[in-house]
Amino acid sequence: MPEKVCGLAAPQIRRVRDLRSAQKQGDPDRVAADNAVGAIHYRRDDRAVSNIFGNATGAQPRPPFVVRADDVADWQPSDVAGFLLKTLFHDPVTGDQTVLMRVEPGAYAAPHSHDQVEHVYILEGSFSDEYGTYHVGDYLVRTPGSVHSAQCDRGATVLLMYTRP
Image 1 (cartoon, helix red, strand yellow):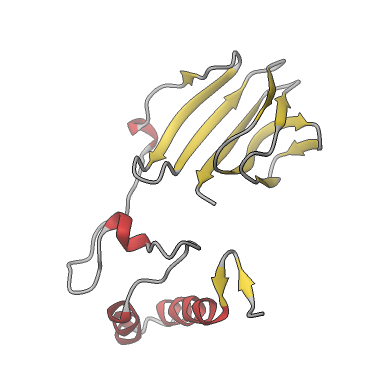
Image 2 (tube, rainbow, N blue to C red; image 1 turned 30 degrees about the horizontal axis):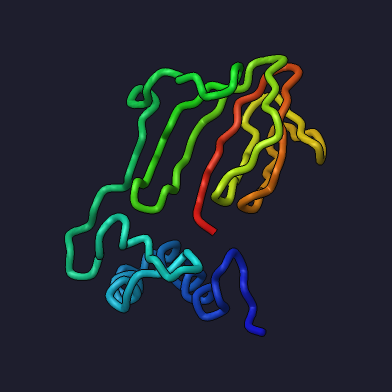
């Protein structure tokens, strides 16, 4: 079976590494040639990043998608008391989204699941579920349909990403 890392096959991994090397070495011809061949596919369903942001082949360079701290709405309450959300990015076509979540001390979310892959990165504080306690710098991934609860004794801020499987 071919090597796979984060859903990428070995030729794609080499291509990403080659492109990063060319970018670091300042080789614009190599970067341009690689971009002309086609977009690198990061998702298992072969949807390229260019499908979301446009095709770079023959097009003018586009600025990155940026959310500035003062562009994001104030914290919004979620369906569960003590869990506040700031949506940073949402793709209405795929349902993919990136969210900051602030969890207030003593907050508890009853067992639930999500339809998408849930990526969780702890920025501040800590929180717990049935499987353990997670602290600053910890990263976890839950598969779609994984039932879990969440509780927070002292408060936390986490970065959440929801992506299609």
